[in-house]
Amino acid sequence: MNRSISGLAACMLCAASAVGAADLSGTVQDAGGKPLAGVFVTARSAARGWAVSVVSDAQGHYRLPDLAADSYSLTGARLGHESARVDALKLGASGAQQDLKLGVATDANARMPGYAWLAALPNSEFKARFITGCTICHDAGAERVRLPKDHAGWVAAIEMMRNRKLDVYSVIPDFDNNELADWLVKNHFGEKPAAVALPDPAKDATAHAVIREYDVGDANSWAHDMAVEPATGAVWVGDYPYDKLIRVDPDTAAQKVYMIPVKGGGAHTLHFDREGGLWITLQLADKVVRFDPKTENFKVYAGFQAGSLIHSFAYDGHGLIQTDKQGRLWMSEFGKNAVASLDPASGEVREYALPGAVGHTYGIALDSHGRAWYTKYNENIFGMFDPATGKATEKVLPRPSSAPHRMAIDGHDRLWIPLSGYGVLARYDITADRLEEIPLPEPDTFPYAARYDADSDSVWVMGNGASSLYRYWPAAGHFDSYRLPSPISYGRMIAVDYERGEVWTSLANYPTKHTGRTTATLVRVGGLAPAPGK
Image (cartoon, rainbow, N blue to C red; front, top):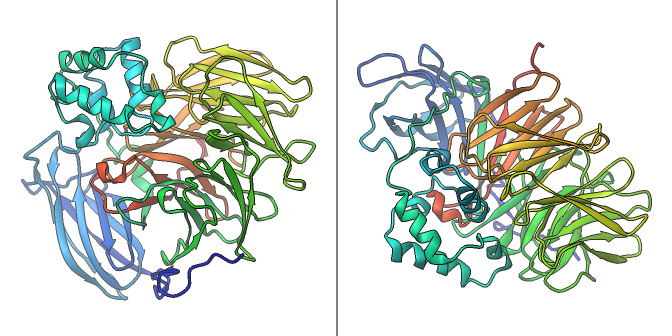
């Protein structure tokens, strides 16, 4: 059945013209008139629902390229400075120039990243448990999250989340509400950030990047995951609470909305398959769907146990659905301590219980032998299920409360596992049975997802808490850092546009309102740095 919405609601901004060739440039200065480097300069079009950002260089110069003739608001923002803003800036086909001057910040803590607030807490297993339980949904830099409270205030906040009766909140750390509240009060959480080294986007890979942000939905939307369509470069995203699938044209920001034919499904994970179909887990409905962009039809697959909370698909080094030799898809079940297979031809679903009475199965990947590897987020475990034997083996991570998140596998049968509890990227060599931890550029970043890029043999990591995308080059042992312009940029899965050489993510702090945004947001990063030594 065709579920496309017709009329204006079906195609938001459908009259938007293509990107033009006009540039907006200028110089940024501090209050004393000196050039200011590392300033995020952002031009936003409210009518189109998108924004373009670059970083000023050592001379304070910036250039926003390839803008359409339009009216923009222009802002300049940098840690430690008061933001500057120019409204109703008219940009014609020949471009324009606009200088900015930033004053001294009246509240130096207002834009501090989440890791600076977490770094103020004493390092311990207790801290890791706190990060594991709370940053699975919330960025510690969001004011609503870190706002200081007394004992009763913290207990009320914790109880509010526990009482929502959503299974996701069962990962709240296994300590008593009063114990956690006492610890937060004792350590003055939210009163003052730590004096940590702060990112300077003028001195890392961000310096040459062009970052575009796209508004999606409204303040109640939750754009959990997104995917780039290989055939067209279009970007697809699910709006979790509204049962919507949204197609975004990256050049015009035009959006087309399709209603998913399952009410209350909770569109979660999205990946294309090699035939061009888009697979989506409907987490709250215990179903998955396949959408055909050509026919605009959905096919629903049921048969999963109630409360399975289907989480992730196994996918390959190009972000495409990975199948085993029998043509089956593999998924993790967050709610039932299980992994599952689906034969798309017959619709047969098989579910495989994993060791332990309880387990929040999160990431999943297939190795070269067809074995399903998985992480258990709250249980501090990663493991392997062998379909040939029907048996699973598990390994406990060396440090407690490591919080293994959404992992990836590379072409060398190495797992790349973000460990949120300690802000590191773990690499596990399956053949050698060897695990090592690679610290991320900033500590306490509660990374969410890792995404292996087979074309470049690099690993992308979503560095939440630092509002950053990290790219790790295993051969060189080197990280590139891409800072995102919004101070609370809590990203989820990472997608690569191989045609344009760009990377995407969706900003999905929960709830969206905690970020101060009025919509969900997609982020596109271009101008990527080459591999080290090239």
